[in-house]
Image (cartoon, rainbow, N blue to C red):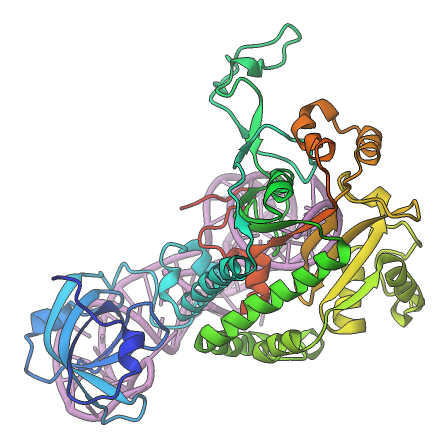
Length: 480
RNA sequence: GGAAACAUAGUUCAAUGGCAGAACAGCUGGUUGUUAACCAUCAGAUGAAUGUUCGAAUCGUUCUGUUUCCGCCA
């Protein structure tokens, strides 16, 4: 059998006792014509392969270059050196794939994240991205584990959608019609989408929520976890045109239940990564600490990455209403000294990033759940509160990232929902299927959306969202 | 969509309008229990266009690319 190998992570956990093993991986460095640091992606730690002098011919040794792939069989012995507990004394070395050292773009040294972004197809072979993407995997797995343990049904909502009613953002059009101006036209000159593939205008989904509600009103609890698309021209370190979103939707939940679930959920997946990817997180913590050494004192984090995650696990998220948040902002010294770029105009204003950041990073210094927002600044499907001016919406704000979760109790009362939709010019006839849930056995229900990449950013400490997704899609950029 | 900054060798950085340098990576050779090895030799660059000037990496204009911030949100 070809692939009878031991993964390096597993090998490093063993005691060196002369056992014979086969490892396969990629060369990180080849020191002294004698020591190969081999990595197979199972961990950032390398196995040191010892090539005894004179045992292999020069022609073979010349092919052992950075990122060449090797199959090595040898015996595991205690290391004579200080840097590692074991050596793999090579008996046979097979070069599976050569790597031309003159052309291979990654050198055995530190590279900038910007440079590696241009080499996104190879950046997984670095320690930083190895750790980031193993943690990303762990978080994804933990998400399914959490919901499965709670009896949620994983629902696959459509990626191509006909409804553009939710207004969550600009959409990408999906069409097979020609783009050279020869597409069939209506009498008024507009494109006739009745002639298009689906017989109507379609887009890539901006949210699976509306379909999720259909599932929740049958299964009780569902969640979605899939790709989401926004054609917004957003150029920031926390926006992508294609990102992954988790959207649980629960029948018989009110806003408080919703907040409880969201907080439990976030803590659960962080705990899972802490328990299962400790080494990777420690590496990322060290990386972040070194990166922050470049920053002026006031821009550095007060806590290290591990410390921050522990803190989040061990403390309740601060919950306060939008109204209380406005009061805190208004009364803050920061505001009195006129240090906000955007003035606190009072109740009803939409909070700017700087206001949210002040609450999270300066005032409370922990994740914050803001709830009961003014109806005027929120979506049509959010449940109207008895005060007549707020809706049962909640956002979770995380230090360093900002909004990580947006959710609400949904408006289950058909008359109130329809009135509000009309006010906001949402076409009721297009969402007939959505309104049917309110017509037939409507129930109080709630849900939220969590941006997966923002969660990965928070846990890994990576500051740019483009560095936590394998192949980022952003305005003007879709390489790979 | 708006604003700003940056662009020099494969990478990370130097260079008062006056000879483009270094470190690392790479080639070649040496060395041999190294720890992103060490020693020596060699080769390699001003994003593009244009203007000002005796002379432009350096100053102006346009373009391209990258980054950051704001808005929109997850």
